[in-house]
Image 1 (tube, helix red, strand yellow):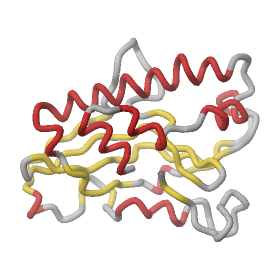
Image 2 (cartoon, rainbow, N blue to C red):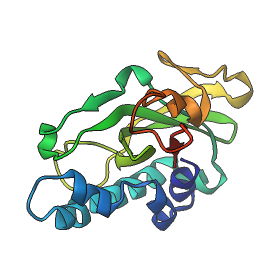
Image 3 (cartoon, rainbow, N blue to C red):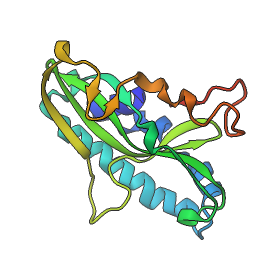
Image 4 (tube, rainbow, N blue to C red):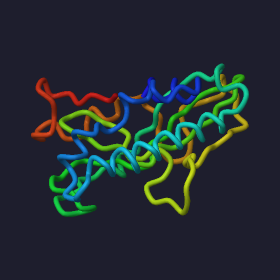
Amino acid sequence: MGDLFNAVAHGTPQLATAAFFPEAAYVQLKSIPGAASDWQNRLLAEYDHDLAAATAELGAEAASATQVSVQVPMEYAHWVPVGVCENSVGYFEVANTRVIYSIGGVIRSFGIASLISWRGEWYVVHLGAILRSGSGGVVLDPQRLSLKSDQFNGQIGPIRVAGTHMLDEWPPPTSPLRRPGGRPRVI
């Protein structure tokens, strides 16, 4: 998630490519005609728009922002079975992950709408929104807290901050979706 945050903070979307769900995986996952075109013209285009919107949300001080942590709400992690959302294979998904960052000593955050696990690695598939009411980028629930970095106790809302490795327990260790060696990788 560091690459994703750096892309947002520096307005360089190409840095976030590695964090985005790969086209080849999407084509395998979807049971729709023109899946490659859908990935390019819809998913990737929305991701790029959302990255730009997130950069704008950070404002003039974006380049000085530092990532503090990533909150992964494991209570939202679930298995998406074959046939749901026109998928030809099942996968693990977790919604509403939060990227916590600091600008000028003040803690702020924005959401990631959906992460998908593909062959043991987690990718962003929808950054700002899954369903959209129009065109343009979306920033998911940006929060600006009146909390200084030195007062931050790791808690925003009901989800405890534990860094990017909360996904180490998902999928479960016995799942065939885990990479060889047993540890999933968070991009």
